[in-house]
Image (cartoon, rainbow, N blue to C red):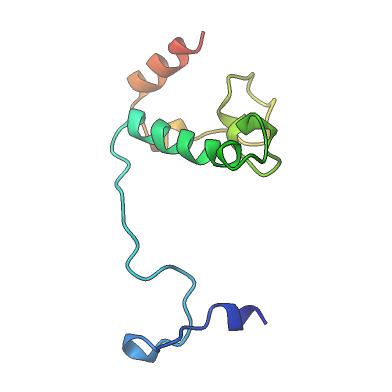
Length: 98
């Protein structure tokens, strides 16, 4: 049943008959801390815009709570800030939430 959902109506190059990803998705490079936050905010607000909850943190399946100011260990997800930003940018970001 699951494979049926992934079936393509017309086989693609190399005779692919199924696909998990959309064909030719638009790719956006996340090139700055501000741009990453903008995209995260967009994602976190989707259930609010859809009328499913009043605040992004209220949505059961959202990781929004991991991005709210908190003490380390208070949430199940710790963000690997170093994957995105330089040490100076991390410190500046932390300082802006105090």
